[in-house]
Image (cartoon, rainbow, N blue to C red; front, side, top):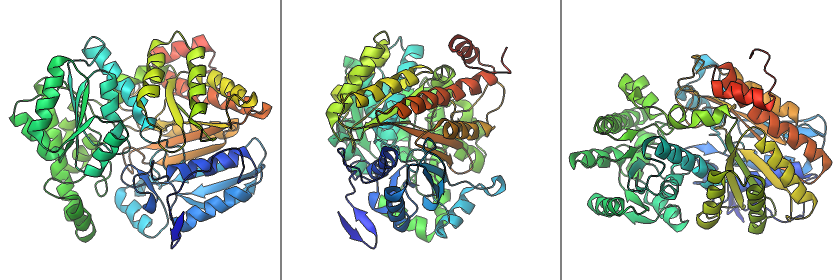
Length: 556
């Protein structure tokens, strides 16, 4: 590693069983922080940016170094507090308390907007943590892959008799989140075009096996994609171009996708979305010199983009928002309420899973040994042999997913299943079946951890879309349950002012204490999601609570 004014280049997480810290919970936090900034994982590690435009792992390099230094000296009965990427205090708590508590980007509601956030950010007072960037549990593109796979699979079940074979899927954005789309689509049998303005991102997806080929010409891409569609072949194409220019051209050519969505970083009008007619370099210059004019140019392109999606929807494309708030941007800033004529992916495809406490259960091998992940894969397969879709996912992931940074895996598990798997993982560590402890976490996009009216909580049955008590309760419950670290963020996924969300991580270190902590955390965390949806009146959540013994005083 080399440093320049505190900047650390080529950060790699320590591996093996030698501890840099005084316990495995601190060690796990240290390794996962560093893993977030591994060049194989992060989009702009030199700037501490992990993904999603400006989602950072630490506020600045001084704060990063101080976090590392503090984790190394942190005692097993102490808790470090991190305020928007800066370590601000260490307090004595107790051994089963979290070793780290994190709060990112929170603003008092009347001030909770991008302008105020950016003003404070420039003053060095806050940081945008996205979801898993500032909570140190990002695992690369695989982290969102299975959720995207599940979404496309549910779309196929609802609309295309269970498969996307012979269907054309079109989207945009191949960054840290959107880069999962090509592989998720081909895993479901689709022909796929993903439009991306940054050629480096396409190249990275092709190099890591997430995307099959790159095209720089629309006609070439269409010829290949439509040929694959006709033959029923799975093929993913990363097409270099600006979606606000390419999608209208497709419409002019009367090429209407079977499935249409978008995962550009539209949540951030300054950093995330490149206006039509500008190169990356021109965009970088304009956003600095003329930020207001730049934002208007972004919105102009977004309007064109959404208008085209609406026209394609009218012509038969199954169209949905994939959680980047592009509909909210044009509705709020340009009065384009018709943007919500196509749904978000959660109410369209995912909410029934949330009602069962199902969501993204992810883990990483702190040993750095890929064989530890294959051992855990087998444990999942042995534990749930009856779950065909889960087994299919694990097999496909083993064959097609390249690890980024520390070896890791993700799968969606329900209430009860997560605790069962946590116990199995801790047994693997205890018996030496894996080389070192395992760290278990999840995305903040989960059943009970988020309030986001334009995404996870869009169209709630009881109208409680904007009620933000639920993620706060989730974070407090995970703290009380003994997670290794807990985070509470503002704005991830959809932007400042649009969401509050919580994350948790717990370590399986093979001890009896870990058995108890994992059982509590991995039961209570998804249980809060069953609670949230049962309270909103969803029959599936009420049924789950009754069948699995979730104690809900207000639910008869």
